[in-house]
Image 1: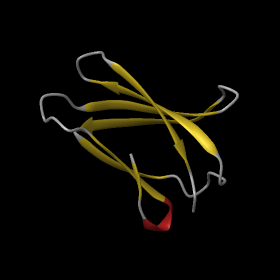
Image 2: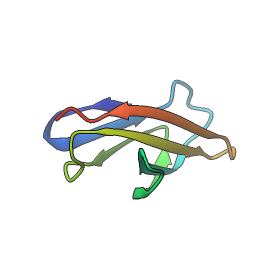
Image 3: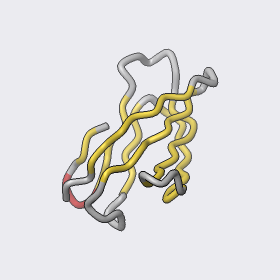
Length: 75
């Protein structure tokens, strides 16, 4: 997960064997802030509405695997 300019955030898998099917952004209290759909190994979403804070990205892959990553929005 990489924070780009203009509030965009890129989610990218190291392998092309799976695709991102869903990305949930949760605040630190576990409340869902965004629920985003995907269909490739690299997705870019505009998250400019998020305030500067810590979040959890819950990424669901095409094989059913779920990856959770903690991130801090800095812009």
